[in-house]
Image: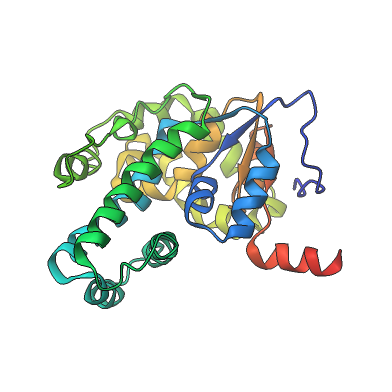
Length: 277
């Protein structure tokens, strides 16, 4: 299995660009300041690419979560909205809300001012979408033809209803045809040796990969498509790029696909590295 590269912040001439996955965007906008700084130093001046599927994942997991919280704040006020959201726990959503709160608090006290909280939230949502675009030089070929990654919000329209509708997956796409065209790749991923299977993130998606290899239409199921998001992203990434990520699953996916990967350190790993320096 490919091991994590050393701490060098510069890429070799053989790999002149980064490919940013969803986890990098999330930590760049809502992560701890040390994570944000590490991302900035790693990217440096190297051009970055991403895919429409990553864009969709970011909008589904981050922007939709922020909009749901916006609606709660609008109905209940900032403080009560937090209690309500805590009770309706959603995997991944809580960390995004906590990051958003940190961003809002840095701009001033919004805990008791409903109008200020809504205005700040709206700005955070719109700025996050704009900053996503600004980090990327270009989107790669949309091989899955997923239409949801192109969803947008019209500035000055804070009800966000159109966006929520645009990013609601109804499996009305051609991703099954994508998997049909990737039969050879599916065979490679599902016939790997046990060393790759030690990777928990990759191991978790293996049963679904086997399922889709037998019947590519199963890849268009909403739940299956979500579980195979990392595999789709790795396949769509051009070989000229290096995957920049926090997700360990790519440390199996990318080597199996003959592609490079660089996993950024988590906050705890950064702390240990700094302590040893």
